[in-house]
Image (cartoon, helix red, strand yellow):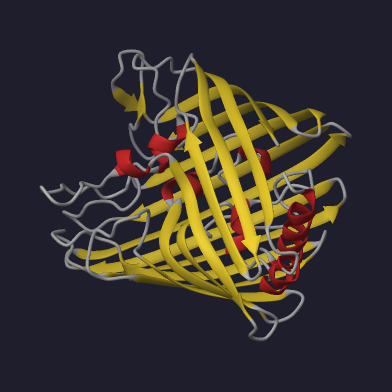
Length: 400
């Protein structure tokens, strides 16, 4: 791995980003590691241009994640339902193993991240599936699940440097990341699981100052490498960052997200997302994430409001404690299909201890309580009869 390029990319992310799936001071305590979608949230194109002057730079990185979980409901099918990527009871699970390659030649930047394990299948659960023909292949989750992201970019000499990229990107909608090492907790919030993980399309980022960056993008939609309708989606994001102190992201995302044959028709869905991370002291940090949206469809008004509050404290040079509270409320018109959950309300409370015996190893112990407005969690018979579930997870991740 070329350490010079890695250092430049990290500096760019810290100065202008706001997660992989950003907030430069949030989730990980190792400030030498940047979160993937910090780039999406506003990585400094001018810094990338400066780095690219030494043409032919190449960076190889990666991480692995594994865990064991005990669900106190003891579900008969061993499923911890609606938990995203940590959803297996009473089994040792290889969550994900990722190999990430990045390069830049002159003003050209490229990236490919491959993944294998338990996580990729959940990651692509919502990917549209379409059949093929004698002269055309089929497409669906199985085709794409080993590819976490892949994109290329070019930096134009406009202003401080206009970075234009195309490909598959981790979503900028959330401060949490795909890589657990960059989060404060082991599990992700209901907001992260419910909202999109990735987008495919084109985006352009322009730093307006040392602290402000704007990003305009056009995508196929939510969680779609291949579009499920004729329309495209757009997003506009502004990020503000004061290194080691404050990071702010404000984002609008809009588009038609229903399939072409949906009884709801083809309504435009509006999403607003905001998150701010405040590093109170070198040992204490706070994070607030808010998200809301509306969709006026043929059956009525669909809408949601969600929020999460995080806190993190460094207890020793090698030990951190984090807490998270999150809630998600959804309104679905009569006869319509919910956008996110089978019940109107989902929430969780999470406590996490993060021990780092080495700068590139994180071992975590996490207790989490999930609750819902109805029976969406499994019982000992494997029936979806429980409105609540408690779990204890031990996980480990390492990276290079």
